[in-house]
Amino acid sequence: MELSEKCELCPRRCGADRKNGAFGFCGGGKELKIARAALHFWEEPCISGESGSGTVFFSGCTMRCIFCQNREISRGEAGKFVSVERLGEIFLELQEKGANNINLVTPMHYAPQIVSAIGIARKNGLSLPIVWNTGGWELSEKVAVVKDYADIWLTDFKYFDNNLAEKFSFAKNYFENASAALEQMVRQTGKAVFDDDGMMKKGVIVRHLMLPGHLDDTKNVLRYLYETYGDDIWISIMNQYTPLCSDERYPELLRTVSEEEYDEAVDFACELGIENAFVQEGGTVGESFIPPFDLEGV
Image 1 (cartoon, rainbow, N blue to C red):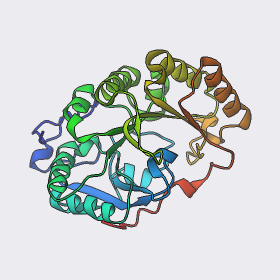
Image 2: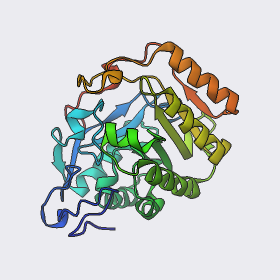
Image 3: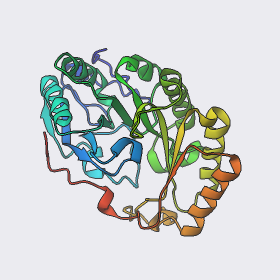
Image 4: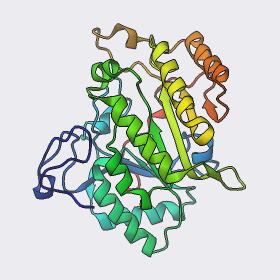
């Protein structure tokens, strides 16, 4: 897997000549760009555990969510360019710090470089599970290519309604691409495997961030996921939406998800029969989930 002269790593297929120095719509170029590499304690319990997840935040993103909580890096502004060899060293440094896994946040636009870095790190003693932490809007064929370098998929499933995906994330055909990518992820990993400490070693966790005013879409996502995959996946129902978007064209996004909305979503999940789920308690809204992108560990 390598960068091409016409980038088609994501559904946007922008065609940028990243191999020769151009930058894609995602903000990614020939070199890796990273904003932070550190132990992270705010993932699902089976990912973070008590020791933390060895999380690498990559700069850039193929989507343009207007409510993005990581806007500082998703637009490709924050971060530092590093070599493939340096990324391999970072993985080993996180392992030495006691990380439960290597957690790659928004990685797919750098998949060729990351695969090479994992290969280098493994030759030098990396033994941790690799978590691909993605926005879900991926090409299934690219997911398939990294199968030997992905132990856990921590993927979003943001929308059921494509109109919402275009409106809020400028992502066309979101459902078709996200569902095909998820099918490939589940095919790769099978049912989840946990160690004696409850840490996931293999499997798929699907996150759904509830948006205020769109409870029906949340219910459609939950119904689709459970009717399609049952207990083969874990579903994380998230209420931590923080209204960082101040655009008055989207009035429904100017508030948090209400307690009533979230409770109804969780009750609906229970009615469907979903048991493999993570739910969030009150008080999760806020910018405490947004780490400082200060080049720690880079």
